[in-house]
Amino acid sequence: DGGITQSPKYLFRKEGQNVTLSCEQNLNHDAMYWYRQDPGQGLRLIYYSQIVNDFQKGDIAEGYSVSREKKESFPLTVTSAQKNPTAFYLCASRYDKNTGELFFGEGSRLTVL
Amino acid sequence: KQEVTQIPAALSVPEGENLVLNCSFTDSAIYNLQWFRQDPGKGLTSLLLIQSSQREQTSGRLNASLDKSSGRSTLYIAASQPGDSATYLCAVTSTGANNLFFGTGTRLTVIP
Image 1 (tube, rainbow over the protein chains, first blue to last red):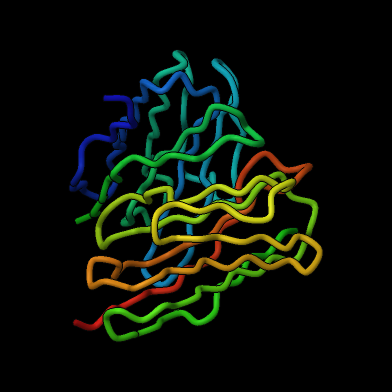
Image 2: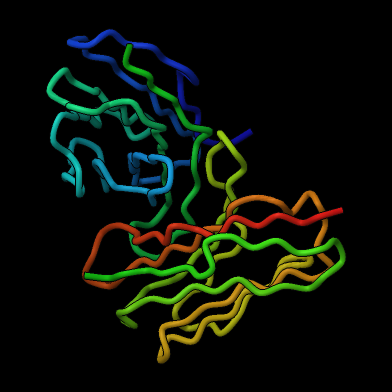
């Protein structure tokens, strides 16, 4: 079945460690996005990519990094520079960056101990 | 910058009732508007996508309308069921922007 796969579903990290969240899609979508969701807040855009080997910062990119070496994959690294990384992270993609329907993965919950 | 508002933040209705969820946006220059459902601890599930040239979209018991000139969209749910209990979010893609702007959602509870 086509879709977006995020892993791991749950992740625990010690302070000072970098962690990488995986996002893979087999929908042949060009545009991919990473969002952060905190309780009581809306989705906030971290990074997005419209094409392979290109990506742009969103509203809260500080402390995060991404790569887009393959069309299917858009991993997110949460670095030790991110001051408050405990959150629910959502990956999404769509075929067209302007008019396409957006689809989401199931999310990854990161907890910093 | 585009701002998307959803009011109320929470809504409780008895099973079987028809209901309307509201979404408003400040900039009418949009490509489309999309409605999502989110269950606790899960990702967002796409419900309906309305392109800027369309007035409404329907899927089963759901009907979404779009009025660009007034910056409003509504999601109508007919004959609500307990399984409809979830948070409903709307998002718009503005022209001139490369990402979506999300509302904070309406948490719906359908009481059996």
